[in-house]
Image (cartoon, rainbow, N blue to C red; front, top):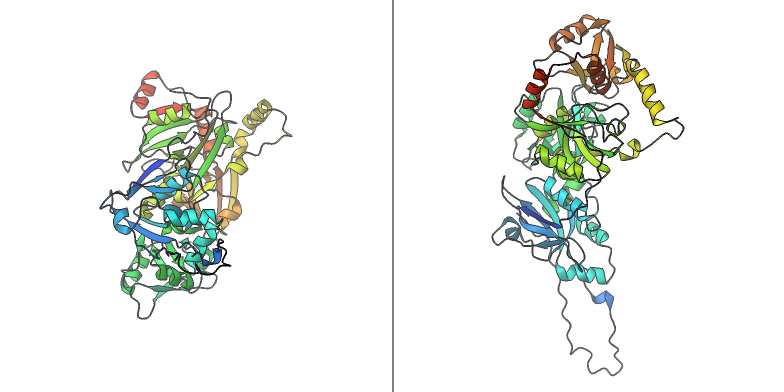
Length: 523
């Protein structure tokens, strides 16, 4: 067991990152040659700087593709006395070199996102999260230095290269409506294999999820559709079940992407209606630390994760919005995927009195894993909301005492009437264990109107206690209620605290056996 009371954003010390992939050059840098003989016989000629005669620097688009486990074959650096994010150590015969990336190139964009003015660690993070395909917009050394000396707007230069009408794609999650279904179908673009136009049901699920009429389908449930026939796409639709995640773009933007020979990637997308998002939690250490446990756990799937557990009431962790059972993804912007439990604890110790954690629910991690995407691509930052402190409350001690008194009142009775979306929620459970929780709440449905929240623990169904019942039994009780349903629920953190307070003391043997199977740290 470890308990810490300090954590701070860890200063980033390294400015050298190694990446790996395949690049296509779009556009060439123009060269200007001055002829000294021109005008030499003119006695009134005055040599001045003629900015109109200097060509505008032309960026190059580099599209890198690598195989699983392969390196992109370059390093990204920040160097003292030099401006910009600099491409270095381009490996001979590597993906970057074969694609045209050159030593000294300055990085302007990563996957259509301007990064020249972005901190170096964040740029490196964007590249790492891109997966096995990456789009870089670069300027060579001379062009970059020329642009900087002339005070040119590099972001405007990047936009001019892409042209007008090149909007980011949209990653849309569609949940089937009981009446109108998914509200979407696809028509092949005539004469062009692997391109599909979107048709929508007006006011249907797809339209509500951010899909627009006439959009072009790029990607479905993790699979690029460019190599699919219409019949294969139809089979995929039939197998998708009650929900589907697609990547779409408008037809004009698609033309621009094709003109530039740029792939349309989920990493470029704006998310719409995604059911799960990773969250950033910012905490300042209190007198007794952060008030949560970090536990190494093995899921039934075999995946080992660092799990956030047992938030103390009124602790910095609870105030930051941490939820019991969430999986830790990052600490101070650094991925924990390859870190051991001890290494994470060490980083906590060295952070100072502040820490930033990125976490996601187990269901959310499974969602992104099935799509083949990193859950860190789409992240909510709760800092602004969670830092609000009420100056009118008496004292922290009084607030904590009041919370203790209100603990049992956190259970909520939610009355629902079946509508077009049914009851508008899904139930989930821990495999082979009793107890159920709300796993999904449909937007605009009865469940949302009644106040149900994702992760709420279901305590009673129509007045009958179901805390020790299995999912199948709970579903039967829900169905037996007909068109009306009454649920007694409690948020997961409060429920776990309540059960912990009422739980009998375990003997030493039980505790020792449990700790042999996991690593736990109090933070």
